[in-house]
Image (tube, rainbow, N blue to C red; front, top):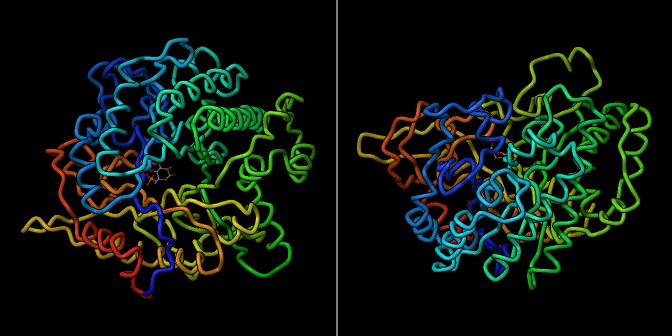
Length: 467
Ligand code: BG6
């Protein structure tokens, strides 16, 4: 395939602090919501007891092994690594005035290591792990005060890393709070719609304040949002199905509309009004929201369908978003439907809607890998998945969509978010650790490692039109 990728395309991979670092109490780190969910983002909230080690406590020990891992990423030719800062390393409880120097120093070391290889960081300020102290003392994002705590944290890290990090993201998959309120906004799972949307509103204001702070502090810095790109198709062409699909897509596009356009869309005000949802939005909030993001980033794993047919609605639903399955698509072992063309469609939808550069910051296949007797891991299924998605990215670029980069999810095996499993592997690099936490943590290159290295080296020329 001849390359359609621009010259400075940011090829790389994406991880998140709570899924790789481990060291959950090292160097003064406080407890985060993720530390209290050893079974994953939908799992029960478990009080911490010493010696009780959920798999995330060590994760893949990136906190100590990052030099080796960055060297492997460099070997693949990464231009960019998306990671997150664990807020609780910087402000262990969340409401401190003074940051924790040991936490700040860790990310200095990490970014310096990346710089040695010319790998640019793309940093998420908050990836599914707010300080538990803020949940306990203040009620999480339900409390307006959390906006101020977050802004203080954002300003602190912008000041500290302003010469090391150019690209930032505010909240990971900000629309996920509708499905996992504890993880997203620190609220109980049975919170009312009004409570959840109020917390989301506070987070949207905090996101806009971080955008403003980034523009003030980081010279030439660019900051984006991060959406879970769960694109939905109508299951039939019945007009009611099409309209319902539009409504459900707006459930998540709403977040992008506020962050990219600077205010609440009219359809959301109607939704609030008709569903008795009360959200306090002050004039000051409205002013803050006018500070819009520079680019849109999103994750994409699957698409799903929508129908108004009750019988079909009640049939088995798949994946974390509980979507109605598409009869034309195959699924991963975890029931996530594989739809490369959907990525081209989504890129076009987002670009048509926002006319801002797009960054694909997560995409990949979670699968069980087998280590052969000779130590090799032949993950052709992963290569095929990624190849087919990247071909569609190239098509979207040809359609005229401005795409800044592509960071595949989990370039090194890590702990999965939804169920805290090691066996759901995304990596080009295998990590010897199982779901029970057994294993040497040794790293090993998979077949896809060499494949991705070639893709990057050829700037996409090595991709095959059909895998
Ligand atoms: C996204 C998250 O939802 O999908 C990541 O931003 C997550 O944190 C990824 O790991 C894949 O989901 P899972 O459950 O397979 O890890």
